[in-house]
Length: 107
Image (cartoon, rainbow, N blue to C red; front, top):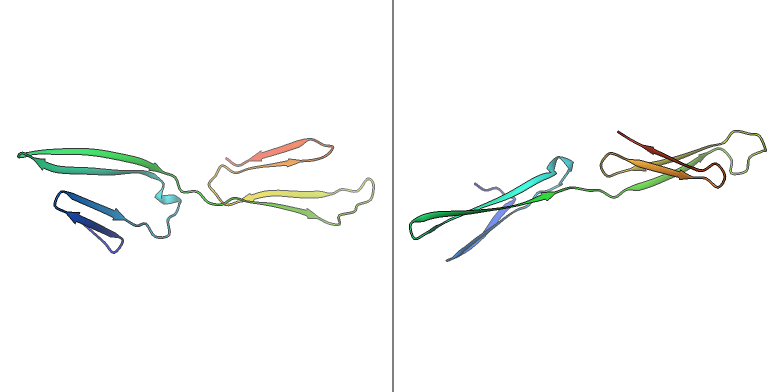
């Protein structure tokens, strides 16, 4: 079988085919297998190779403060730390100069 995304090169002793996945996404993750068969002296021979493909994405950290950069003693201040992109589970860590380190992870 074939499609616009596949092509083959042929010679007397070789057949090499490729399949191009356009706009690859996370649903394309998985094990891809190549099953090769030929006929040697009237007997069919076969071999299989496989590879696991995992689609990844750039990860972008975000850091935003809510409010003024300079606050008065005793006031409340909020800082947001986030991550976008890639596959779950996502994990963010906020390191503070005085209150320690906080880590959150999605399920």
